[in-house]
Length: 53
Image (cartoon, rainbow, N blue to C red; front, side, top):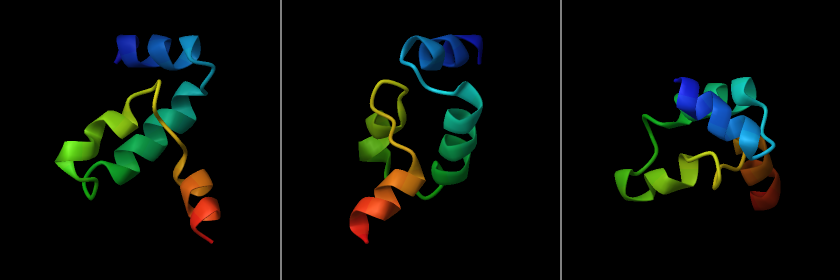
């Protein structure tokens, strides 16, 4: 957990927002696209839904 938090901080991301979003999405997220949830690739679900609209 510590490494995820520090990595999020190093990438200029709010760790709490990142982890909250990832935990909410991971169960339905395709396994072959898990790299999208890594801190350096992460895009908040709200930004994804805004782009789709």
